Length: 464
Image 1 (cartoon, helix red, strand yellow):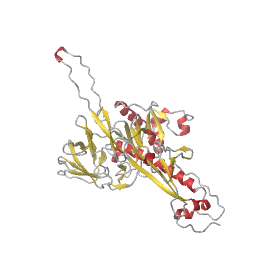
Image 2: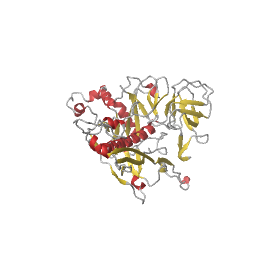
Image 3: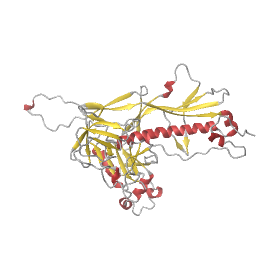
């Protein structure tokens, strides 16, 4: 009979110890499809952890439609604008230990189950890193005031510094530069006449530099403004809100997304000359709530009148429509899955994962879909197996091949390390997943309109 007590084992494992003839099998739990990483164009990076890699992109020369005149003289050389966007390699890992001795007589294939769990954790972690990078970029430059401000104030307290800390000015500074008196960021504030220049940004929490913080202006406001007023960067990406409005506070519980909102997103991308993906369509990651909202849209219902046997109504899935391939994605950000929250108003909540508010002042939970074009995001990764030196390693390393509920989990580039037992009993096996990667989002300041990011459009709407 197995021992009633397992020395040194975690309580959760001890609680699973069975003395009867119960089935000792492990079954797979519910698991999301991991889709955001698939949006990234992957490139291996030959650099060290923490290294910032500046990627250069050139702008466009303006079209010339005036014929040459005899009085023009020689052709005048033109100046081509460039810009740079930054990728910084970071390392991520997770580990778990397994007692082989206790696993043999307490549970069925604990080591295999633990490795499965590690692979699932690795896949979901990398997917959320990619999601947060994409949504952080395309949510930036839109914020709200936490506190009311007076006419003479030269500082304002805002719910997020995301999109307000760096500036790229074609022909002036190629790489993103921190806002300063020499390189200010032009912003507009609801209730203030004209624009103002941001010359400094200071976060409330240094561990979250894009979180709530204080913006310093080059001149006083000139008017008293209320808390929750919208603050917008001149370089902000386009956000389409159900029902319109300049901030998340404009979204009420009845502001649901419609088919026209998605069509409008494709119009924005096409006007910015953003190419579709290689399959010929733009891609939209949309939460399941939004699928239901579109099915309630009268325009969509008219489009599918007398088609109860059509594929969309048979599957309750939008599929491919209006130049967009839709992906039902349960990992689209909301207040429950976007990291730690901070109060930014009586009801409003900021989420650290995407550096944006996920609940507005009216208490409405904000849903977010994103429509992407080609090369909206890259993945730069480093082969983690290169960490092993000539001294070798005490164990072995390999790759994951993990599925859950029939879903193949993307763990490409993730290193699996199994450490040989080093305890006195020689039965405690250490397992670890490890990846060095980053998901830079390229900017396009040197071409097109003033938006810093142009290759995707975010849609905001009310969740049920």
